[in-house]
Structure formats: C-alpha cells, structure tokens
Image (cartoon, rainbow, N blue to C red; front, side, top):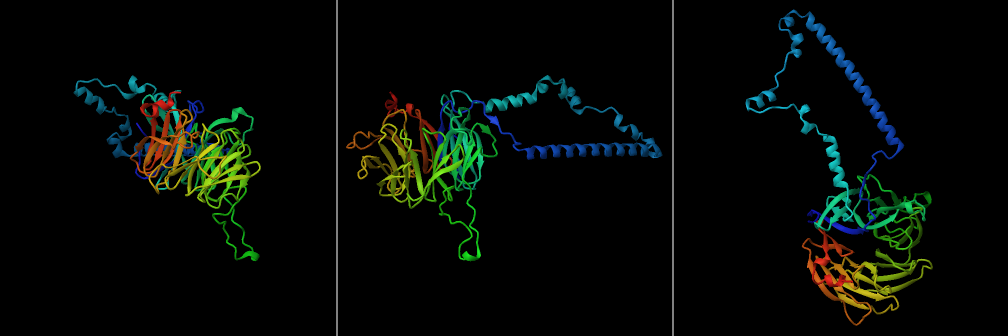
Length: 475
C-alpha cells in the first residue's frame, strides 16, 4: 500500500530518518508557546466567566418576573400555567421500545455507552500516533498546484508494505529540498542531549527552516537560518538606485534567493551547508544559527547541488547551471574544477570509492570523475532519454556498486557501477516506469528505495524482492 496520490502535486525531495533516531511516542505541540499567549488565554477565560455570571443573573431575574405575572393573571390561573413545567413528561423513545416488545435503557444508565468514552477516544489517538520499533520513517516535501506546501512525515511498515503519512507541517512557500539532521539549533557542540529528529527545509524563501519531526501539529520551526534581506534605503545622493534588493544580490550573512540544496556534515554535526539561486554557498554553524562563511565567487549561475565528502571534513562538492563541478577546500577556499557538457542537476560522492564523485545532467547523461584526474571522467553514459533530466540519483550504502537514477522521463533505473574499472561502463540491472509522470527524487536506506514523483506519488520498493537486485545485497 502506498500513500494516496494526487493529480496536482509533486514530491520534490525526500530523506530517510535513520533507525533509532525517531521517537516511538511523538508528542503533541504545545499550543501556548509564549507568556503573552498564556496571559491572553487567561484573560479570555476570565471574560467568559464574567459573561456566564451575567447571563445567570439575567435568567434568574426573568424567571422571577414571569412567576409574578402568572400569579397575578386570572386567566392564566384557569389553565394552571404556573405548574405547566412540573407535569409528568412522557418518554416517547421508551414508549416506542415497549410497543416493539423491547426493553429500553436510558443512555445515562447504559453501561456500554458510559464506559469511559473520553478515555477510549484518547487511547485510540495515542495508539495511532505511537510507532513501533520495526517501523521506518522518512520525510518529504509535498507541493500542490494550489500553493499549499507541507513537510510530510511518513511511516513505512515493511511487514505489511504499508506506507502512510503520520503527520505533516504546513510551510509558507514551495519546498525545494530537505535534509535530515540530529543537531538541535542553539545547543552546545558537545551536548549529546541536544540530539533530535530534525529536518532542514529549503524553499523559495531565502530562510532555511528547521523542524522537529517528533512533534505533531507543530506551529513553528525550532530554528531558522538566515533572514529576508532588508531593502537598501533610498537617499538624495542615490535616487537612481532601486529601493529593493535585486534577486541575485549576494550577502555573506544570508541567502537572498531560493535555497536549492542542503548538506549536513557527516563528521561535524553542528555544520550545515546550503546552496542557492543567488550563486552562493553558505556554511552554517547550528550552534549559533549564523553563517560561518560564504563562498560567493565560485559559480556564475544558480548552484543546484552540494555534498560533503564522507571522510575529508573540509572537502565540499558543488555543481551548477554553469556546466561545471567544483571540489572545494572549505579551509583554504581553493578549488578543483571539472567541466561537464550540460546543466548539473545533482551531485554526490561514491561511498564505496571515496576518490570518485558522480554528477547527473539535464541531458539524461551521468558522469563520474576521479578527483585525481580533472580532464577525463571515469564513466560517462546516457542513463535516460536524451534531453530528459536525470533529476536525482542515490548510491546504496550496503550494496557496493549499486546506483539508482530517476528521470523526468518517468523511469527509475538500477546500475552496477565499478569505479575501480574505468574501462567497464556501468551496466543496467533493472528499469521500471513508475507510471506517475516525472520522477524527481530517490533515496536508498538499507534494502529499501524511496521514490518521489509527480502527482504526489511517494513509493517504497524492497530491493530484496527483486531477483536481479537481491544478489547485490548478499554481503
């Protein structure tokens, strides 16, 4: 069973939550988060109590006036209207049950209806929200044509192959990318108690929002990175200058355009990198929620993908629409440049061959480089239909040489790639047409593959159930 598809939405990005990193008992959000809200609630309650007191006084005075009028009215005395409400009423429902030969029990005396209805509803809600140790969790960016964007937390039950949305968070703008992290913004770098189940989200806004995935019905993020740039003031000396910041204006402290890619550091947990349409890369310190530094002059176009090296802490990979990939030393700011024939869609390091990185292009081509050779790629192959972008790809962490790609042509393909053998091109193992339009994002975790596509389609595949893929997971 998969999540219900919709005709007018897309899954733009998704990430798995590592096992053991999410709470089995998600908590409800506290609706009153500030002292001002608490005081306002108390004031409203006091006003309500005053209203009830005034209402009761009015009813009592009205009843007293009515009794006096009835006692003094000779015509009303004739019909005994004063005792009208005291006459014995006939229980129509009870009489109906008698006529049918059935016994009737009043609702207030029915043990089945009285049996802790409130507690039963509360227990039911808790059971629905409670998770099992065997569950898997993943988070996705869900965008609808009507302008509604949400960050959805999904639960996958592998035994039943059941995928459903557990809860979601309303976002202010179209969500472009998401990255999972466990470092709570503002906590000390060596504070292990600050580890949480969080997601950083990049949208059309320049601000990066960080949400707690273990909180249901959250109203606001636990942290923000960046801000909206203030407009430049217009003075008498600069009347010709525009009053607002240009979309591509660069700023060292914040992005000034949509955030296109996010990368959490695999070794330094308080570090998060982001790339933007403003042609800059920001490296954020989650402890202070401020930009440590900004790389502004590396790309001449929007930067669509970034990735930290799995072992070299200062090495960052980037790619953009200027048809080049860069391997950057974040300490010295030096770089190595690799040219590609078309716009870059996504970049990633090979976890099993750490000298190699792979890039997907807007032309359906995949390329893999060894960082020791800037001129010639190890592999270059037409993975998908020409002029149909390879929107995303993912390496399996547990199956060496297994690579999966997805494309705007609507297909997902599995490849056997051995980077140690440059003469041997990647071999296609399996291919599938998802049938829900363009595919935008894929992500491996253990033997499961999550796929996000058009029409709101999110699907999880178990690779062990495929005869061609199962041998790759034997080790």
